[in-house]
Image (cartoon, rainbow, N blue to C red):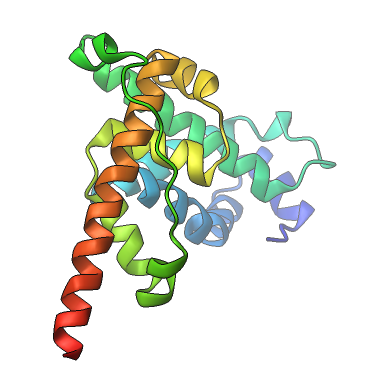
Length: 187
């Protein structure tokens, strides 16, 4: 994504037209990030708008040597994590008691990848429980480790591993069910 430096300068000076132009430019990128973490579009749009507001208010901290897309993705992910923490601040989960008791299972997606498309996999990921979905996305898609995920979400490293393992098992079952459905349809 190439962003005109003039647009960024105008945005820093609170030019509403430039801000709207920037919003339209970054919307697809930010929405794709938000939809990985939220099941419904309205919630994803709320997160996107919060993230965009933070982007606008932090433009003076943007360093031109950093790719703009990477910078806005990072702000968006941090916004999502912050909102998740606020929402779950007072909740305590029994999952922390399971710390380290469930090993992370490796999963081979190669066969399944050939049988269905990315949209179906994205929908399966959206069906995961909220915390499991966030851990899966942060670990598999965004490349964070369990320690970082634990710190971001306010859970232990072991709980992060548990969520990833559970996500993988759930997705594996969903993939098998879909493959069986496809196979029975073809017979």
